[in-house]
Length: 370
Image 1 (cartoon, one colour):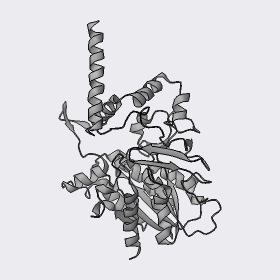
Image 2 (image 1 turned 135 degrees about the vertical axis):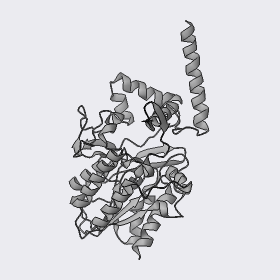
Image 3 (image 1 turned 180 degrees about the vertical axis):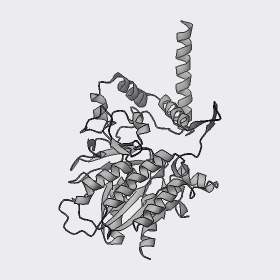
Image 4 (image 1 turned 90 degrees about the vertical axis):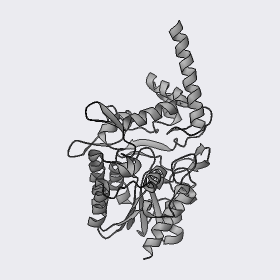
Protein backbone atom coordinates (compact mmCIF):
# COMPACT_ATOMS: atom_id res chain seq x y z
CA UNK A 1 0.00 0.00 0.00
CA UNK A 2 2.94 2.32 0.68
CA UNK A 3 4.06 2.20 -2.96
CA UNK A 4 0.54 3.17 -4.06
CA UNK A 5 0.56 6.20 -1.76
CA UNK A 6 4.00 7.17 -2.99
CA UNK A 7 2.86 6.75 -6.57
CA UNK A 8 -0.14 9.03 -6.03
CA UNK A 9 2.04 11.64 -4.32
CA UNK A 10 4.56 11.49 -7.18
CA UNK A 11 1.81 11.96 -9.79
CA UNK A 12 0.36 14.93 -7.91
CA UNK A 13 3.77 16.56 -7.48
CA UNK A 14 4.61 15.89 -11.13
CA UNK A 15 1.35 17.53 -12.21
CA UNK A 16 1.96 20.49 -9.87
CA UNK A 17 5.48 20.95 -11.24
CA UNK A 18 4.17 20.74 -14.82
CA UNK A 19 1.48 23.33 -14.07
CA UNK A 20 3.91 25.94 -12.75
CA UNK A 21 6.55 25.16 -15.38
CA UNK A 22 3.96 25.55 -18.14
CA UNK A 23 2.56 28.79 -16.73
CA UNK A 24 6.08 30.22 -16.49
CA UNK A 25 6.83 28.89 -20.00
CA UNK A 26 9.88 26.97 -18.79
CA UNK A 27 9.19 23.94 -20.99
CA UNK A 28 9.43 23.47 -24.74
CA UNK A 29 5.68 22.80 -24.75
CA UNK A 30 3.45 24.97 -22.54
CA UNK A 31 -0.08 24.27 -23.82
CA UNK A 32 -3.06 24.39 -21.51
CA UNK A 33 -5.08 21.15 -21.26
CA UNK A 34 -7.53 20.90 -24.11
CA UNK A 35 -10.60 20.40 -21.93
CA UNK A 36 -9.87 23.68 -20.15
CA UNK A 37 -8.90 26.03 -22.91
CA UNK A 38 -8.54 24.48 -26.38
CA UNK A 39 -12.20 24.70 -27.25
CA UNK A 40 -11.59 25.19 -30.96
CA UNK A 41 -8.45 23.64 -32.40
CA UNK A 42 -9.02 24.31 -36.11
CA UNK A 43 -8.74 20.75 -37.37
CA UNK A 44 -12.29 19.97 -38.47
CA UNK A 45 -11.68 21.34 -41.99
CA UNK A 46 -8.62 19.15 -42.43
CA UNK A 47 -8.33 15.71 -44.05
CA UNK A 48 -5.69 13.08 -44.79
CA UNK A 49 -7.18 11.27 -47.75
CA UNK A 50 -5.02 12.50 -50.64
CA UNK A 51 -1.70 10.93 -51.69
CA UNK A 52 0.15 13.92 -50.23
CA UNK A 53 -1.50 13.46 -46.84
CA UNK A 54 -2.66 16.53 -44.92
CA UNK A 55 -5.04 18.79 -46.82
CA UNK A 56 -8.46 20.41 -46.46
CA UNK A 57 -12.03 19.49 -47.27
CA UNK A 58 -13.38 20.95 -50.50
CA UNK A 59 -15.46 24.09 -49.88
CA UNK A 60 -15.28 23.52 -46.16
CA UNK A 61 -17.42 25.26 -43.59
CA UNK A 62 -15.74 27.88 -41.44
CA UNK A 63 -13.61 26.15 -38.78
CA UNK A 64 -12.63 28.13 -35.71
CA UNK A 65 -9.13 28.02 -34.21
CA UNK A 66 -8.64 29.58 -30.79
CA UNK A 67 -5.56 30.05 -28.64
CA UNK A 68 -4.69 32.64 -26.01
CA UNK A 69 -3.21 35.05 -28.58
CA UNK A 70 -5.52 34.52 -31.58
CA UNK A 71 -9.08 33.55 -32.45
CA UNK A 72 -9.67 33.03 -36.17
CA UNK A 73 -11.48 30.81 -38.68
CA UNK A 74 -10.30 28.73 -41.63
CA UNK A 75 -12.25 28.00 -44.78
CA UNK A 76 -11.31 26.31 -48.05
CA UNK A 77 -12.24 26.72 -51.71
CA UNK A 78 -13.14 24.33 -54.54
CA UNK A 79 -9.76 22.54 -54.52
CA UNK A 80 -9.32 22.53 -50.75
CA UNK A 81 -6.93 25.47 -50.58
CA UNK A 82 -7.34 28.15 -47.92
CA UNK A 83 -8.78 30.93 -50.06
CA UNK A 84 -12.05 32.72 -50.75
CA UNK A 85 -11.31 32.56 -54.50
CA UNK A 86 -12.12 29.37 -56.39
CA UNK A 87 -9.19 28.06 -58.45
CA UNK A 88 -10.94 25.74 -60.91
CA UNK A 89 -12.60 28.71 -62.60
CA UNK A 90 -9.35 30.65 -63.11
CA UNK A 91 -8.72 31.33 -66.79
CA UNK A 92 -5.74 33.70 -66.57
CA UNK A 93 -2.42 32.08 -65.65
CA UNK A 94 -0.99 35.29 -64.16
CA UNK A 95 -1.07 33.75 -60.68
CA UNK A 96 1.53 32.81 -58.07
CA UNK A 97 1.41 29.33 -56.52
CA UNK A 98 2.62 29.59 -52.93
CA UNK A 99 3.77 26.22 -51.59
CA UNK A 100 4.70 25.33 -48.04
CA UNK A 101 3.49 24.14 -44.67
CA UNK A 102 1.57 25.95 -41.92
CA UNK A 103 3.46 29.23 -42.48
CA UNK A 104 2.22 29.36 -46.07
CA UNK A 105 -1.28 28.31 -45.02
CA UNK A 106 -1.47 31.21 -42.57
CA UNK A 107 -1.75 29.29 -39.30
CA UNK A 108 -3.32 31.51 -36.65
CA UNK A 109 -3.98 34.58 -38.80
CA UNK A 110 -7.09 35.77 -40.63
CA UNK A 111 -7.21 34.94 -44.31
CA UNK A 112 -6.84 38.62 -45.22
CA UNK A 113 -3.54 38.72 -43.30
CA UNK A 114 -1.90 35.72 -45.00
CA UNK A 115 1.10 36.11 -47.29
CA UNK A 116 -0.86 34.79 -50.27
CA UNK A 117 -3.89 37.05 -49.80
CA UNK A 118 -1.87 40.24 -49.32
CA UNK A 119 0.33 39.44 -52.32
CA UNK A 120 -2.34 40.54 -54.80
CA UNK A 121 -2.68 43.99 -53.21
CA UNK A 122 0.90 44.99 -53.99
CA UNK A 123 2.21 42.53 -56.58
CA UNK A 124 -0.52 42.55 -59.18
CA UNK A 125 -0.88 38.78 -59.23
CA UNK A 126 -3.34 36.48 -57.52
CA UNK A 127 -1.66 34.49 -54.77
CA UNK A 128 -2.75 30.85 -54.72
CA UNK A 129 -2.47 29.44 -51.20
CA UNK A 130 -1.18 25.88 -51.38
CA UNK A 131 0.08 25.79 -47.81
CA UNK A 132 -0.97 23.01 -45.43
CA UNK A 133 -0.55 22.46 -41.71
CA UNK A 134 -0.26 19.04 -40.11
CA UNK A 135 3.44 18.09 -40.45
CA UNK A 136 3.67 18.93 -44.13
CA UNK A 137 7.11 18.37 -45.68
CA UNK A 138 8.88 18.47 -49.07
CA UNK A 139 7.79 14.98 -50.15
CA UNK A 140 4.19 16.01 -49.67
CA UNK A 141 4.74 19.37 -51.35
CA UNK A 142 6.22 17.61 -54.38
CA UNK A 143 3.17 15.33 -54.65
CA UNK A 144 0.81 18.27 -54.13
CA UNK A 145 2.43 20.17 -56.99
CA UNK A 146 2.51 17.21 -59.36
CA UNK A 147 -1.02 16.01 -58.68
CA UNK A 148 -2.92 19.25 -58.07
CA UNK A 149 -1.07 22.55 -58.40
CA UNK A 150 0.22 21.79 -61.90
CA UNK A 151 -3.41 21.68 -63.08
CA UNK A 152 -4.19 25.18 -61.77
CA UNK A 153 -3.29 28.18 -64.00
CA UNK A 154 -0.14 29.96 -62.73
CA UNK A 155 3.16 31.26 -64.05
CA UNK A 156 5.14 31.79 -60.86
CA UNK A 157 6.01 29.74 -57.76
CA UNK A 158 7.05 30.83 -54.28
CA UNK A 159 8.34 27.94 -52.18
CA UNK A 160 8.57 28.20 -48.38
CA UNK A 161 11.29 26.08 -46.74
CA UNK A 162 11.09 25.67 -42.96
CA UNK A 163 14.30 24.00 -41.72
CA UNK A 164 12.74 23.59 -38.26
CA UNK A 165 10.80 20.52 -39.44
CA UNK A 166 11.01 20.16 -43.23
CA UNK A 167 14.05 17.88 -43.03
CA UNK A 168 12.42 15.41 -40.65
CA UNK A 169 8.70 15.54 -41.51
CA UNK A 170 8.92 12.83 -44.18
CA UNK A 171 11.96 10.89 -42.98
CA UNK A 172 10.91 7.25 -42.59
CA UNK A 173 13.01 7.09 -39.42
CA UNK A 174 10.33 9.27 -37.81
CA UNK A 175 7.37 7.22 -39.06
CA UNK A 176 6.47 5.98 -35.57
CA UNK A 177 6.10 9.56 -34.34
CA UNK A 178 3.00 9.95 -36.51
CA UNK A 179 1.32 6.58 -35.93
CA UNK A 180 -0.79 5.24 -38.78
CA UNK A 181 -1.57 8.57 -40.34
CA UNK A 182 -1.99 8.50 -44.11
CA UNK A 183 1.09 10.47 -45.13
CA UNK A 184 4.12 9.72 -47.35
CA UNK A 185 7.71 9.18 -46.20
CA UNK A 186 10.99 8.81 -48.07
CA UNK A 187 12.80 5.53 -47.46
CA UNK A 188 15.99 3.75 -48.47
CA UNK A 189 18.99 5.00 -50.40
CA UNK A 190 16.79 5.96 -53.35
CA UNK A 191 14.31 7.84 -51.10
CA UNK A 192 11.32 5.99 -52.54
CA UNK A 193 7.91 7.00 -51.21
CA UNK A 194 6.27 4.69 -48.68
CA UNK A 195 3.20 4.85 -46.44
CA UNK A 196 2.65 3.25 -43.01
CA UNK A 197 1.53 -0.35 -43.40
CA UNK A 198 -1.79 0.20 -41.61
CA UNK A 199 -2.45 3.70 -42.95
CA UNK A 200 -5.62 4.42 -44.89
CA UNK A 201 -7.04 7.61 -46.42
CA UNK A 202 -8.98 9.49 -43.75
CA UNK A 203 -11.78 11.99 -44.35
CA UNK A 204 -11.10 13.47 -40.92
CA UNK A 205 -7.74 14.77 -39.80
CA UNK A 206 -6.47 12.22 -37.19
CA UNK A 207 -5.85 14.76 -34.43
CA UNK A 208 -9.27 16.40 -34.79
CA UNK A 209 -11.87 16.01 -32.07
CA UNK A 210 -14.13 13.89 -34.28
CA UNK A 211 -11.39 11.38 -35.09
CA UNK A 212 -10.38 11.12 -31.45
CA UNK A 213 -13.96 10.40 -30.36
CA UNK A 214 -14.29 7.68 -32.98
CA UNK A 215 -10.91 6.08 -32.31
CA UNK A 216 -11.27 2.78 -30.45
CA UNK A 217 -7.59 2.49 -29.58
CA UNK A 218 -7.07 2.30 -25.82
CA UNK A 219 -3.62 3.89 -26.17
CA UNK A 220 -5.11 6.73 -28.20
CA UNK A 221 -7.75 7.32 -25.53
CA UNK A 222 -5.02 7.51 -22.86
CA UNK A 223 -3.04 9.99 -24.95
CA UNK A 224 -6.16 12.07 -25.58
CA UNK A 225 -7.00 12.09 -21.87
CA UNK A 226 -3.48 13.26 -20.99
CA UNK A 227 -3.64 16.08 -23.54
CA UNK A 228 -7.15 17.13 -22.55
CA UNK A 229 -6.90 16.96 -18.76
CA UNK A 230 -3.29 17.25 -17.58
CA UNK A 231 -0.41 19.70 -17.57
CA UNK A 232 1.97 16.77 -17.17
CA UNK A 233 1.83 16.05 -20.90
CA UNK A 234 3.90 19.22 -21.47
CA UNK A 235 6.71 17.86 -19.30
CA UNK A 236 6.49 14.45 -20.97
CA UNK A 237 6.60 15.95 -24.47
CA UNK A 238 9.53 18.17 -23.49
CA UNK A 239 11.43 15.18 -22.09
CA UNK A 240 10.79 13.13 -25.24
CA UNK A 241 11.91 16.00 -27.46
CA UNK A 242 15.10 16.52 -25.48
CA UNK A 243 15.88 12.81 -25.41
CA UNK A 244 15.84 12.79 -29.20
CA UNK A 245 18.52 15.48 -29.18
CA UNK A 246 21.01 13.21 -27.44
CA UNK A 247 23.51 11.13 -29.32
CA UNK A 248 26.18 8.74 -28.26
CA UNK A 249 29.81 9.78 -28.41
CA UNK A 250 32.84 7.70 -27.42
CA UNK A 251 30.83 4.65 -26.38
CA UNK A 252 28.39 5.37 -23.56
CA UNK A 253 29.10 9.08 -23.22
CA UNK A 254 26.07 11.23 -24.09
CA UNK A 255 25.94 14.88 -25.06
CA UNK A 256 22.94 17.06 -25.80
CA UNK A 257 22.64 18.40 -29.30
CA UNK A 258 21.36 21.89 -28.49
CA UNK A 259 21.82 23.16 -32.02
CA UNK A 260 21.78 19.99 -34.13
CA UNK A 261 18.39 20.72 -35.64
CA UNK A 262 16.61 23.21 -37.90
CA UNK A 263 19.09 25.73 -39.39
CA UNK A 264 21.98 23.89 -37.72
CA UNK A 265 21.17 20.27 -38.50
CA UNK A 266 23.86 17.79 -39.48
CA UNK A 267 21.46 14.88 -40.08
CA UNK A 268 22.74 13.79 -43.48
CA UNK A 269 19.96 11.34 -44.36
CA UNK A 270 17.01 13.59 -43.54
CA UNK A 271 18.60 16.54 -45.34
CA UNK A 272 19.40 14.50 -48.46
CA UNK A 273 15.91 12.99 -48.54
CA UNK A 274 14.18 16.33 -48.10
CA UNK A 275 16.34 18.03 -50.73
CA UNK A 276 15.74 15.12 -53.10
CA UNK A 277 12.04 16.04 -53.14
CA UNK A 278 12.61 19.79 -53.18
CA UNK A 279 14.57 19.24 -56.39
CA UNK A 280 11.91 16.90 -57.81
CA UNK A 281 9.33 19.62 -57.13
CA UNK A 282 11.39 22.18 -59.06
CA UNK A 283 11.80 19.70 -61.90
CA UNK A 284 8.00 19.73 -62.25
CA UNK A 285 7.86 23.53 -62.57
CA UNK A 286 8.10 24.78 -66.18
CA UNK A 287 11.47 26.40 -66.88
CA UNK A 288 9.98 29.73 -67.98
CA UNK A 289 8.10 30.24 -64.68
CA UNK A 290 9.46 32.71 -62.15
CA UNK A 291 10.61 30.90 -59.01
CA UNK A 292 11.49 32.01 -55.49
CA UNK A 293 12.63 30.03 -52.45
CA UNK A 294 12.03 31.66 -49.05
CA UNK A 295 13.87 30.09 -46.09
CA UNK A 296 12.05 30.66 -42.80
CA UNK A 297 13.93 30.79 -39.49
CA UNK A 298 12.00 30.29 -36.27
CA UNK A 299 12.43 32.46 -33.20
CA UNK A 300 14.75 29.79 -31.76
CA UNK A 301 16.90 29.90 -34.90
CA UNK A 302 17.21 33.67 -34.60
CA UNK A 303 18.40 33.38 -31.01
CA UNK A 304 21.16 30.92 -31.94
CA UNK A 305 22.22 33.02 -34.93
CA UNK A 306 22.31 36.15 -32.76
CA UNK A 307 24.60 34.27 -30.37
CA UNK A 308 27.03 33.54 -33.18
CA UNK A 309 25.95 30.08 -34.35
CA UNK A 310 26.96 29.52 -38.01
CA UNK A 311 25.00 27.58 -40.63
CA UNK A 312 25.87 28.72 -44.15
CA UNK A 313 28.65 26.11 -44.39
CA UNK A 314 26.27 23.23 -43.68
CA UNK A 315 25.18 20.70 -46.31
CA UNK A 316 21.51 21.70 -46.38
CA UNK A 317 22.35 25.35 -47.05
CA UNK A 318 24.76 24.47 -49.82
CA UNK A 319 22.18 22.13 -51.36
CA UNK A 320 19.33 24.68 -51.36
CA UNK A 321 21.66 27.27 -52.90
CA UNK A 322 22.61 24.78 -55.60
CA UNK A 323 18.94 24.01 -56.33
CA UNK A 324 18.17 27.74 -56.56
CA UNK A 325 21.05 28.23 -58.99
CA UNK A 326 20.27 25.18 -61.14
CA UNK A 327 16.59 26.06 -61.50
CA UNK A 328 17.01 29.81 -61.83
CA UNK A 329 15.18 30.53 -58.58
CA UNK A 330 15.72 33.54 -56.39
CA UNK A 331 16.76 32.56 -52.86
CA UNK A 332 15.65 34.61 -49.85
CA UNK A 333 17.01 33.67 -46.44
CA UNK A 334 14.92 35.66 -43.96
CA UNK A 335 17.55 35.11 -41.25
CA UNK A 336 19.80 37.61 -43.05
CA UNK A 337 17.34 40.51 -42.72
CA UNK A 338 17.55 42.75 -39.66
CA UNK A 339 13.85 43.65 -39.74
CA UNK A 340 12.96 39.96 -39.37
CA UNK A 341 13.02 39.35 -35.60
CA UNK A 342 11.16 37.84 -32.65
CA UNK A 343 8.25 40.24 -33.12
CA UNK A 344 7.29 38.20 -36.21
CA UNK A 345 5.86 35.43 -34.03
CA UNK A 346 2.83 34.94 -31.80
CA UNK A 347 3.58 35.09 -28.07
CA UNK A 348 1.58 31.86 -27.54
CA UNK A 349 2.64 30.02 -30.67
CA UNK A 350 5.73 29.60 -32.87
CA UNK A 351 4.03 30.69 -36.10
CA UNK A 352 4.05 34.05 -37.85
CA UNK A 353 1.60 36.63 -36.61
CA UNK A 354 0.18 39.32 -38.90
CA UNK A 355 3.45 41.24 -38.79
CA UNK A 356 5.44 38.13 -39.71
CA UNK A 357 3.39 37.62 -42.87
CA UNK A 358 3.65 41.30 -43.75
CA UNK A 359 7.42 41.45 -43.20
CA UNK A 360 8.11 38.33 -45.28
CA UNK A 361 6.01 39.82 -48.08
CA UNK A 362 7.77 43.19 -47.83
CA UNK A 363 11.16 41.51 -48.17
CA UNK A 364 9.94 39.52 -51.18
CA UNK A 365 8.53 42.65 -52.84
CA UNK A 366 11.67 44.69 -52.20
CA UNK A 367 13.73 42.13 -54.12
CA UNK A 368 11.12 41.71 -56.85
CA UNK A 369 11.29 45.44 -57.59
CA UNK A 370 15.01 45.23 -58.42
